[in-house]
Length: 114
Image 1 (tube, helix red, strand yellow):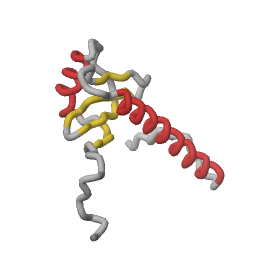
Image 2 (cartoon, rainbow, N blue to C red):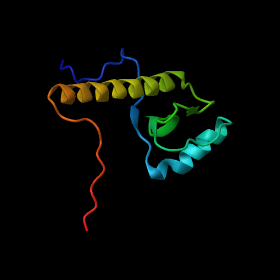
Image 3 (cartoon, rainbow, N blue to C red):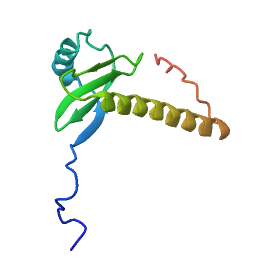
Image 4 (cartoon, rainbow, N blue to C red):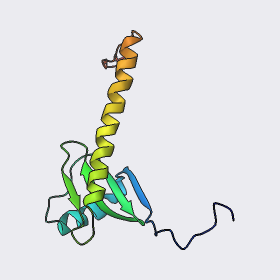
């Protein structure tokens, strides 16, 4: 029997996607915030989708969360926060590598050309 054969003994697994919120997610996020008795998130956010439905979101600026109060979402919120923390650590690590190589990590404004 191959390893790709379905086994009835394995528990069902929901499809989970963690991704950036897109502009066309705004109505869904507003509805989610209303369900959660919260203000809509402002700025960039990441969302957790389970089986194609956005069930939780975290703002990248400030870490405010919204989640569906009628679905089990504590695990999703924890995963979103972990994802944000891991991404921040990864970015800091790349910055340190560039600094050790002698590259400047400061952003310089582009010079206007006349």
